[in-house]
Image (cartoon, rainbow, N blue to C red; front, side, top):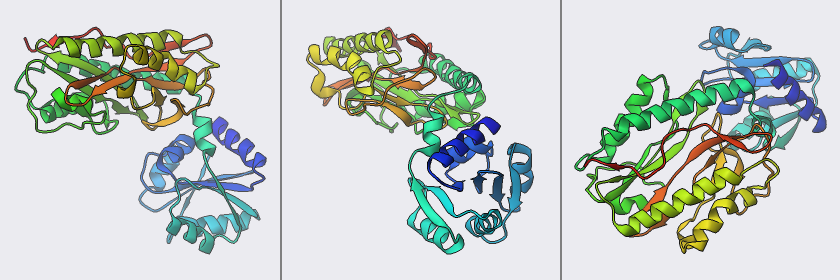
Length: 356
């Protein structure tokens, strides 16, 4: 964790701050290694403290390498105020996107320092994954891939979407995941035209497409893949939708490389979908960053001018959603390399016809 702490201090100097407090769960875990639910990292230019209550002191001492663990008896911010006074700190940086208004009021009450709100301080550091992070992410993706292989033999006409979702969840947990990365999407028939069609009681019928969007939460990192399958023989219209999305996704995977903006990466798939007359049915961006959170930077979208760099992990997930007809999304997780990208997910993408 020491390199991460040093990176934070470098940013702190640039902000002319004396200390930073980090208590948002993902950022707190990233900087300290702490997996509990209560506490805050307080990093000054000289020292690093992890403040928590009696329930987590022993756990924090085991997990928070490079931090002095400090127990509070009333509130995290009150203890932070005492430590800041001890350090003679004058300016405290805090995460404005994660601190509630009542939290801000508590900071004001308990810390007699100048408060500087900052956005994305840790998120920017988290953009580039280390080899250790990539190793954990690959394992999270592998669990999702095995789950897809498993679920393909489970799906047949008459099975409910919610049962498919639950089976995916149970399988991933048996394979070592703490949980799924998010509420699993299992959307069949006309519901496959809902980009976020969380599993329902609907029974899957023959001739429908079924979109499955799921991922494993493993050792603090998320995977996120989507596959769309046919249950029984689909119509020619549904086959056309699938083929266009499949081609667009392969095209994007071939073209995405470092130096591109999010807009350019998005266009690699979007232009193909527009050319085939489905542009109005692709309403979201091509992808998003992936790591300790299932949605983080960078974004691959028509609105993102952020440049993608080696070490970033992103999803590539074009989709076409035609109301009252059906939809398809195909999503892989990739890491940006020095000269292109490497796909982490390996599940097959040719249209699978199941349950026959």
